Length: 131
Image 1: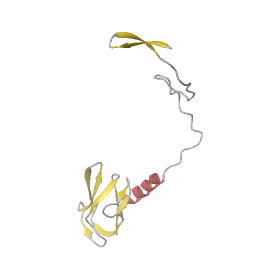
Image 2: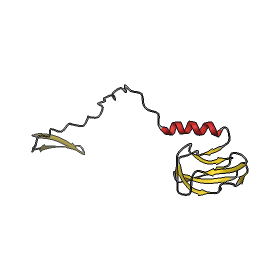
Image 3: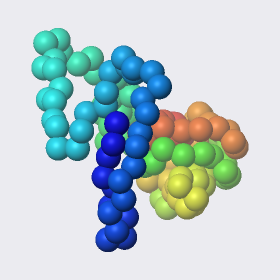
Image 4: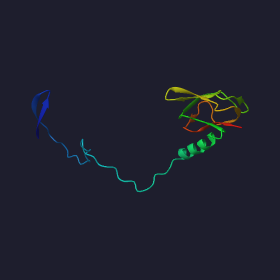
């Protein structure tokens, strides 16, 4: 099989020999578009969404401090039984190489710390519970 190839403005005539017939499916060419098939079943809601709604419900009551980001706990600064004032530091989270300081949303006594140094946390996960 002979082909013409142009490189840097110069045209060359080349001869190509096909050794085997390739029967594998070809990838689509640029510009071709195939729409995705329609989804006939509802998509299930992930458990994280339900957990976020649960945390939001109780955040308004002031009993929980929840994570504003997905990240890693790098420092815990409170323990059960400790009294905290509004805006006192509770812990530090790392997300995408940035540190986020978590502070007490109000004055209260720490009932339970649900995470420890090195734990991974998800968005809206309960970090600290207050009495």
